[in-house]
Amino acid sequence: MLLAEKKKQQNLSEYIIYMYQTEALLRSFDLDIAQIKARVIDNIPRKSLNDEGKAALLDWYRGIISEMKSENLEKEGHLSFVQSEVKRLSDLSLQLQVEDENYRVLFNRARPAIRASIVESEGLINDPIQACLNGVFGLLLARLNGKEIMDETLAQLDHFGNVLSYLSVKVRGN
Image (cartoon, rainbow, N blue to C red; front, side, top):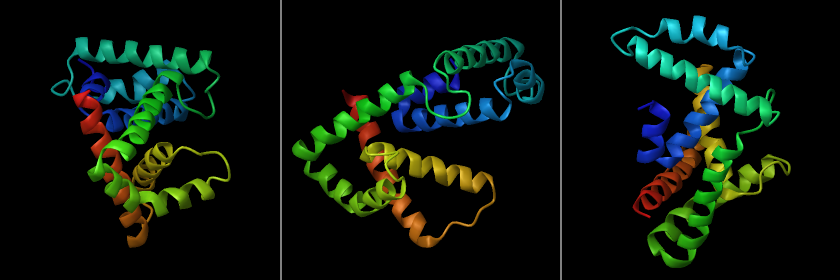
């Protein structure tokens, strides 16, 4: 089973962020499967992934590239099937804000940071869960690029992570 499928079963928020990472990785190689094979797959140690696993991963990347091209996502944006999972989390969030006091407390702690993130996006984001996902993904990218992250930002992102973790646990139970 590919890592993406494991993540989807175990933690939907992690799966979504993993797929965002995958989109970014594929774009960094201009959606060129030969580059992906030469620079990514061929560099995976055999003890980590055997030849059959590498072939399956290469086919999976091919499929993602095909989807990205068919949805005109060569430069930016997210795959529709991934965004449908974001909607699933968003719908659950709305439901839990009404039905679940524990979630309501977590969400309200994150609310100021969510609002700030939405305002900062200048209209590109209007969904609170998308704001949380983008914040966590942005942190990952910043760390990968060696950028310093302020303590205040880390505290805000901690709230995002708490919201996403709670939702992922709840969605797995449904």
